Image (cartoon, rainbow, N blue to C red; front, side, top):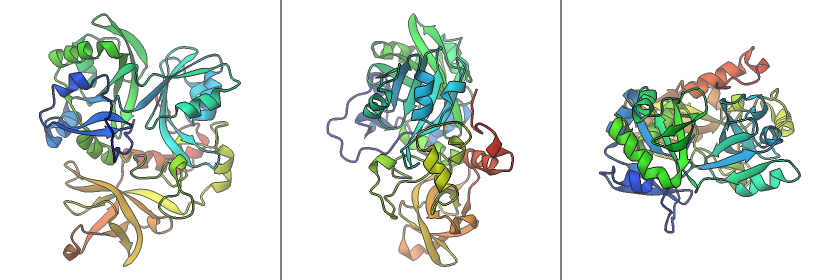
Length: 395
């Protein structure tokens, strides 16, 4: 999952169920607010947390994200309409990513759907959608319950994620299948998730047991907590757009042709998450009419510079064609990685220039960055890709 934008003005953000536990691990004491929940920006140092996620295992408090328990005989049909994730085709234990679209085919949010049993699904999203869920469920044999504030959610990412969980005593967890298990006597649900290029496991357990589970994992494993700043680097390296940062969500868009208009999956580089042959989902008819007609493209760039700035102009042949929406220095790439909102036609070229943060520094060379997400999009756009139900169907 991807964290949405941080709250610009947070009026007494609520502590997540895990905050009391994770706060004891914070040396930097740098906090922010997401969806009205408190979130750590940094625990120790951004570089240490980044390296832990890349080489060992990182533990992330996912409490600021929204999650729902969807139950009932019509749950698969309900989720097939509400999201582009292939809920009806998931067998027990399977998970898949998808999008939530409005009637015009514009992206409202990113979602992940996991099937826990025949009639029970867990749905996670970047923003809260309780009212939308309730309205969509009217007249259907389905119940959608917001469990965000009732459970603690801990993400374990990195190459040693499974070892961390096994050391803590949760031996039944698989990085590819959703399951339930017992961790120190606590019933715990686990499901595969993805953050940028990192795959991992999300543990969901009663909020009353947050401190118990956290201490158990920290004592028995080599996992290290990771904050939003390090996660931001990993997100950009993976090519995953951030709602409210890289694009305006459809339910908050102002309309028109400016920067505050909504975008289609194609414009976001996420058409592979909304295949038109996947079946009926909200916004599908509009997407058929909008196919390949998007005016903008969200593109991952590698910039030959040590820093950049949100809003920096992107040029092609001395002509401004867009702007940087988010950026970070990538230790792996040894340069800045960024997202840019560009003119769709100009985005076909691969050589760009980006204005430097300091006007006197001129412009830095930039080019398209190949990411795990862009590779999925490329495969889907290929001759064989459009015939598959979903390029990103994860088992």
